[in-house]
Image 1 (cartoon, rainbow, N blue to C red):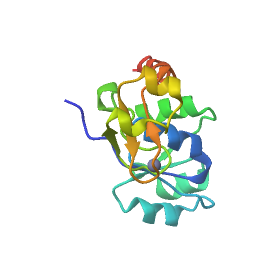
Image 2 (spheres, helix red, strand yellow):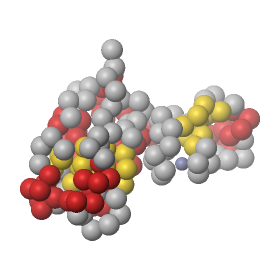
Image 3 (tube, rainbow, N blue to C red):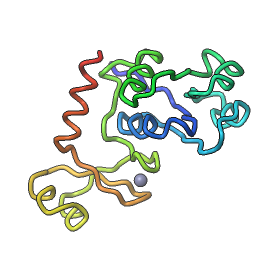
Image 4 (spheres, rainbow, N blue to C red):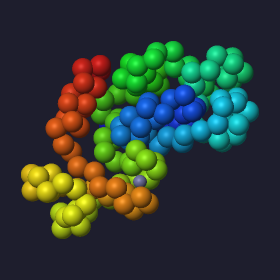
Length: 155
Ligand SMILES: [Zn+2]
């Protein structure tokens, strides 16, 4: 049985990681300010784990509220988060959440994606999802598959 994914807050230095985590299905808030332990703690509301690259924030919040991300590379950072939070491959919900606004995506009829994506994409895919907040259309393209394969190798 898949477990519910933990909810997260990422600090401003983790923008790329935040995008990847949302694409994995994590409900992830993004804080654009200079990393500040008190503000990040407020944003977490006590039920989101704070991801930070800031030593000061990490020292103030600590485990289990905070996870310190020490790698530079976004893919290595995801790996660190997945292992650090004991998330398994079956817990992930790829392409379920908008990477721009964190909203859940809805499956839409193929016709609704017409004109919103490149013609070759529309012609070669059957299933599309849409963010009702920003209107962005998502589909499982070859880049998505490569990215999922990469992640599966970590588990
Ligand atoms: Zn969106």
